[in-house]
Amino acid sequence: MTAGQPPAAASLNAARRARELASTAERGEADLLVVGGGVTGAGVALDAAARGLSVVLAERSDLAFGTSRWSSKLVHGGLRYLARGEVAIAYESAAERGLIMGRIAPHLTRPLPMIYPWLPETSLGSKALAGAGLAAADVLRRAARTSRQTLPAPRRLTRAEALTTVPCLRRDVGGGMLTWDGQLTDDARLVVAIARTAAAHGAVILTRCEASGLTADGAVLTDTLTGGSFRLRAGAVVNAAGVWAGQLAEGVRLQPSRGTHLVLADAAFGGLRAGVIAPVPGERARFVFAVPVPGEPRVYAGLTDEPAPGPLPEVPEPTPGEIAFLLDTVSGMLDVPLSRSDVLGAFAGLRPLLAGGSGEAGGATADLSRKHAVLTSPDGVITVVGGKLTTYRRMAQDAVDAALAARTARAGRPGAAPGRSGRSAGPCRTRRLPLIGAADRRALARVRAPARLVARYGTEAPAVLALAGPAPRLAEPVTSRTQVTGAEFTFAVRHEGALDAADLLDRRTRIGLVPGDRDEALAAAAGALAEG
Image (tube, rainbow, N blue to C red; front, side, top):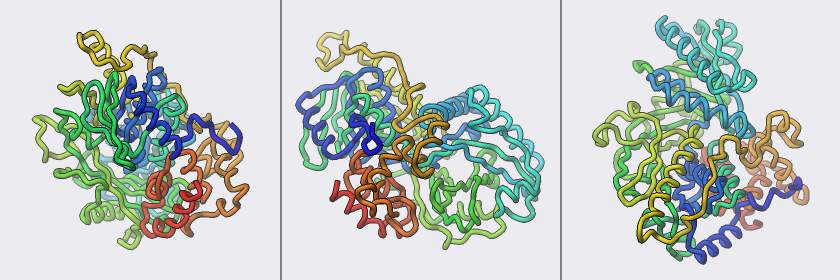
């Protein structure tokens, strides 16, 4: 790879999509069809392709269109699950966090200091519980073999240390606890990197391609840009459509939960450089936090956990009550309370949680387990639901294992569908497989590019810079309130599969989280798409 050109095998763009859509329709078969282009679906495609299978991923909209882009942008160790006694889920989270930060995507992650402040209303019991929980979380960190260089040990803070670390805290803070967790540069960028890595291993990534009529041996794929359809035969089908999974596979009952975040002006915090944790009053294992956004003058504050019954919206909307709740809870920690004018934007995502107990909706979603599940429908479709962004890799591994087992079982039956079910698959490789752009932290420190670009593109950052060589205007930010440049838009069009302005503004970059910034950047997005 030269500085100006990423490897072609990992480049997604409109021309490649058209070629691969045509060749897939002509061939008409694959070892595995994956439905859904979120973090789980992209993870399944990468796992299967890395095992040597022929893979087609069909996503009806864009990569990271759904829940995957509405997360807290954390790769966390499951402190909340420890507080609920769900040790297995907490350990799985800690183990996967270590893999993501250490080998899979160190360029997209960073250690984030988090402060749990002790205020006058913080009881001795709460302090003791927090200290015990953080100590237990550190035990899990060690069990997961995550180094102290990656995540330092938790410790107590004096009042002076707490105010030095987070100057915006209330003046009556009495100290606190300092812990560390993992933070993503951005969740949608993680999904795109996974999908591009899958493509580099031979997976066909088809966005704007809707799957319908799912069965154990295939589905009908429709190009939503042209309306053309064809049937794809597959050795197995994995439904990774998130909150929409129940609409595609029989017997899958979900109870979606809405998690809302605010996008706040960093100036309201006086320049936040560490996350701040606040317990939700009256609840034992729920917290609200405020964390700085890497490379941008923003703070994310979240999150809620509210039942979301009824029809599923394409883009969930935060409620006024949720916005007020987050503002009030975060303000309770600050010397100067937040106001509605500090809110630059807000976003909400729906968690694809399995319905609890009898499967009836309407219960408290905060009480539902975050453990993922791999289900086989009566029609033979493999569905993977639940879980968390941090554990996407393990979810994908379990789903591919289940698909291979089902494929093997069907292959021995009389009258089995022809498909390419005879291709052998190797073992899962994703524990040690870096994503495109990844390198160890020492190598990343030597990349000749601004730190902000390295945190978004890793070793590909020089390729982004090179685009501005023949066109210096591409080095300029696309709005007055962001550092995102025109070169990043061009790179997204040529190499990251962006097909329209929404792809550029809402997923390849997160300019769209602030409506005013989105409007200002529309012209630059249109120009990048026109130039290709």
